[in-house]
Length: 162
Image (tube, rainbow, N blue to C red; front, side, top):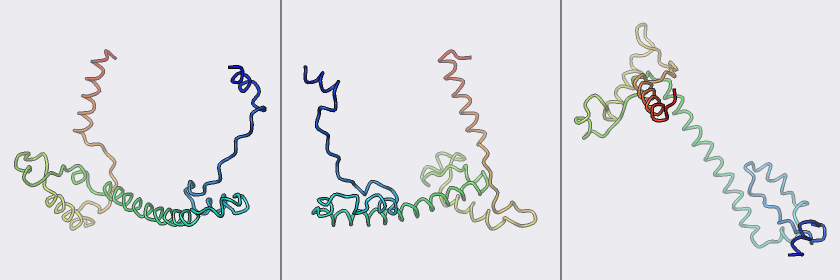
């Protein structure tokens, strides 16, 4: 108990804890990792470590995966931007398998019918009487807004909030 008390009151009496060797693979940018892992900063033992080849392979894999990540991000971003450029009737369509289309008449459509709507939109857009080909519309579906308002009212009633 006395040792614990001494350690808590006088930390300078304890031996210093050695710092771990620098790890360069925790940075997201290869240029920054190269700057922070300069060979002058790393201990001599770390440079001759048997896993140096593994570290190089991991760094190369990280660069390759970052490039793939950027490509995937651009694809998702492009689809999202396109999705808001089509008319709300297309964007708000519910898609379901063909076998459920008959059961849920008017509630959903097969993917083929949705594709036909998209093709028809781009075939007729841009003309004198047609809708514009790209028209960003960020409106909220009135049915969704009404359902959300009803849900909020139910929660308020349960919590007795006015």
